Image 1 (tube, one colour):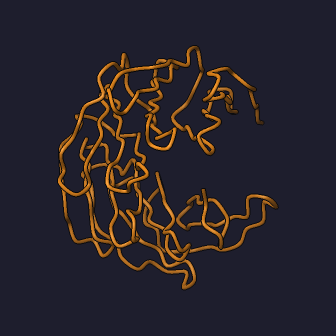
Image 2 (cartoon, helix red, strand yellow):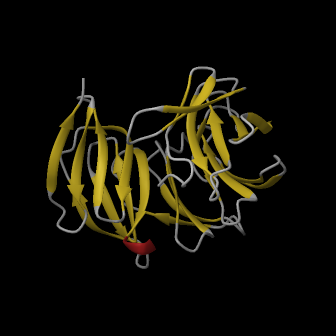
Length: 239
């Protein structure tokens, strides 16, 4: 879900590059990143990008001006996840220090909660904009209140979590595990209602309009699953 304008993806080689997905054309390059970009998010108006770096730093980039607006040390190790909160004046971030933190976009600290004990590779926002889904390599998952810092645990993971996604208009939460299974939780009851099994995934997953789950595979491709039927749709392979 990239903003419009611009459309694109972000990568880093000491710069941040914005690409047009349809044509593959490089649209813009922003200099100033100081480490490998592990995660990113667009502001709702498409004018800023928040990036989380390998060394634990967050940078907020001005897209039209092609420059870094603000930068600060956010986590002790790498930043695993980052999202703009509604209104684009605050951010939520997760890190390999196990913490979930919120910030003003100028770097002023708000909440700092030690929710997990290892890297928090899963982060997604619920439709209310207040609650976030987090999931960690330590095998824990939680629903985090970005205003109070309180958490509710989702119990039942068998192995560490690689990524997480809020689905079904916020009624369900999907956690993808290191075992290759994707667990679907009912948010109201906090119970597992479905399992997608025998995937061969990596550490990236995404959902499309609550219809399809795409999981990076170790075969340099992606597995596509229907979230409605819980059936495997296709295996995509790359070079």
